[in-house]
Image 1 (cartoon, rainbow, N blue to C red):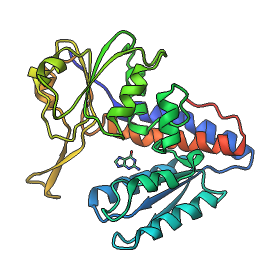
Image 2 (cartoon, rainbow, N blue to C red):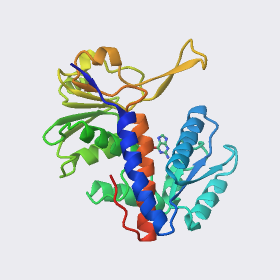
Image 3 (tube, rainbow, N blue to C red):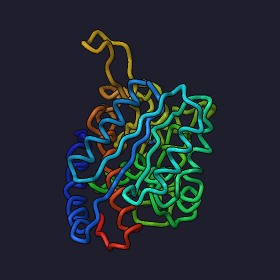
Image 4 (tube, helix red, strand yellow):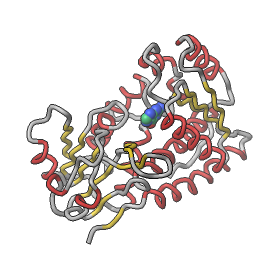
Length: 297
Ligand code: GUN
């Protein structure tokens, strides 16, 4: 029997625990603040950012949203980041990626004060994570770890295969699963577009993570019997729906389900966890910056 991994339920539990942390902060006169910055007119990015702001409102985080015209000079974004770095009410800053081509995304990530970098993308935070001394775990990889933990899926000694080598998911998740820690200790293989015999490598996985941005490309042929399949993909594909599209993952769910013991659906798997872990990092950031001891889930 295959079991669906319910990201909505695990995310709800995390949000509930975070509410206690927020109460602790409030008792010390601190309201955690998260600034989101959008310099894009991509509809998917607009949706993600508005969902993040809605999440903030629901849990009692002060959400601040800044929109910058995608045609504006890059300096406008850098100046905005400088202002947010200096604002004591802002504990976390998230610049929604991707930014327009004329903006240097590396400079954007370097400009965010590392203590406010709730994405965990600043080089200092990337370095800390690789060295096993993480401060902010990137939200999607951390959410994947929390899903595995919630379903008692052992990473220790497991063969984990990650398809996709992005800085946002593949690389940080590989590093986290590799750490000498109870939620790590896996043997990690990272596959990508140039990987030889991808099918065989995927079939060997105890834990298979699809994070390549390719709609429904993982099917039963690529899943070993009894594997856990984690689908990080959120792809908009044309469909005969009211919106003209539907969201599908990187995994062909119906096919992969024939082989897997555990599988995440799309939507309702990893997506809600990414959002919950952003709130987690924001509460952590407020605790660190205000010197308040906050218990985190
Ligand atoms: N674009 C896609 N995923 C992410 C993310 O986790 N953080 C930011 N800042 N932008 C993204």
